[in-house]
Amino acid sequence: MYDYAAFHAQQCAEKALKAFLVWSGKPLKKTHDIGELIILCSQIDKEFMKLFELDVDFFFLTSLALQCEVRCLVD
Image: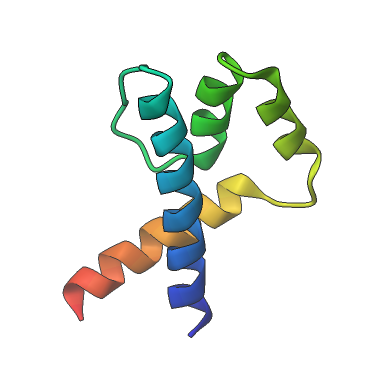
């Protein structure tokens, strides 16, 4: 159950960050890495760097989401 929640949380964050990049006219890079997307967004608006101050492990969130994505495809 938590795996699915992590997958959807990661997908929500990923899609929101990618939407900001598209809205800003920047090309998208094929990635699921939330931290990398935050850095790309911060090149447009430095306020995105504040997300790293939150008590969120973006690497862990990304890794859970990728694991779930693989299992969801197999199930």
